[in-house]
Length: 196
Image (cartoon, rainbow, N blue to C red; front, side, top):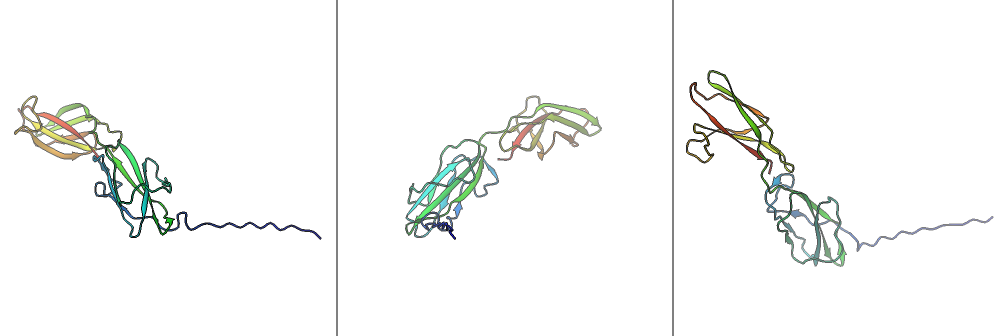
């Protein structure tokens, strides 16, 4: 009787991603799920005994940095990043071994939203005016709502002394102003607010 034996031995070196990655924090973006206007994120990542860190900042959630040390300092700032979702990835070297990767996501929206359009005011009866408009637009963080100002002068500005905020934040595309008097002309300004 003849037979063959096939033996397969797999040996994984502990020198490749042998232990948990460092904890990452960000003083500029403490909650990575919240949109921020800050386009220069700062990250802090420390591990006692680390002889070097390798990191990547990109748009992918699971990138693994290479095993070439970029720094021995446990912090990094990236200046002037574009809008959108970003991810910071870091590994450290200690005792001749590289750690597993740690990841930190964040969202940047540096630009204000586009204004709502077609604001229309219609009297509803004694003491109230119905305001309607077409929604503003924000392609990154999205529209959170609208701040509504009322004034008595044509062409008033939101910084004028006579400007009154009648709603700090209204969602949707309509609002009823119930604080008006008959026989008075009212003017309105609608300010789009995004989630950043």
